[in-house]
Image 1 (cartoon, one colour):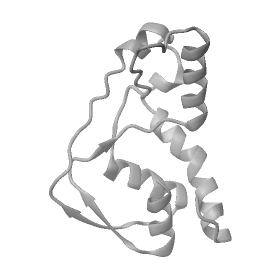
Image 2 (cartoon, helix red, strand yellow):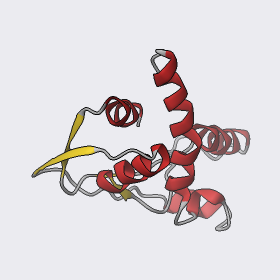
Image 3 (cartoon, one colour):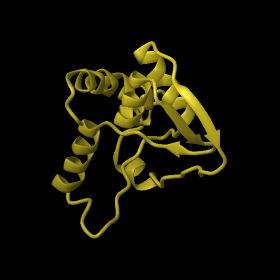
Image 4 (cartoon, helix red, strand yellow):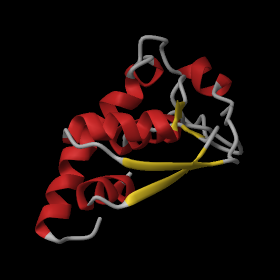
Length: 128
């Protein structure tokens, strides 16, 4: 995300693969859910996938970042990439369906939280 923010702010062209998806999770939610699994001895001897219910294409992510920054991204596209399908059934077993991580617009909320922070870092010359 920081690369996308920096590229858009600096007016650099982004080359995106068609078909690439990502699943964004807020670091706070990742820590919260990890803590829940550890404290409740659920995570022992298991591989836990912590992901939201909805993937976003990288193009949609870049468009949302552009909207937040109110600046158009310079884009070019190449073939390639793949869709992802994180297995979150175990997560759904233990976490209530009303948890924000399962909301359809969750990935946008993550961007709305972190893009302004990354913009501030970009403007101050600090690296993320």
